[in-house]
Length: 57
Image (cartoon, rainbow, N blue to C red; front, top):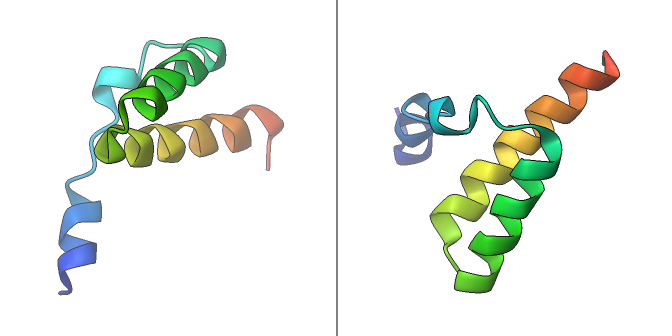
């Protein structure tokens, strides 16, 4: 298994589970301002999942 696949399998969205989309974007803005690459990547994944879940795609 590649290093990328191992990391993706450990991806955890629990800490963002109770946030709505507006709050997720606020967290993403904070991560962008602090240049926190890890949080940016995680929040991007969560926002994408929430977006497609809400749109029914």
